[in-house]
Image (cartoon, rainbow, N blue to C red; front, top):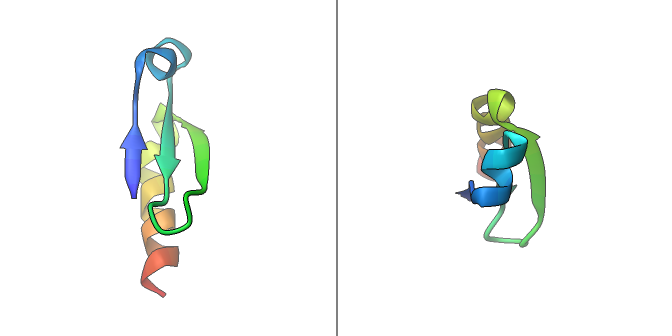
Length: 46
């Protein structure tokens, strides 16, 4: 799992969560980042 916060994400108050296994990614609001990472980790541990 990678969390990406670049210049564009800083401007839009978002972050990108990318799974390294499948390469899928989603953009989330930074306020929802912790919950989204927990959810992504929960899926990968099952």
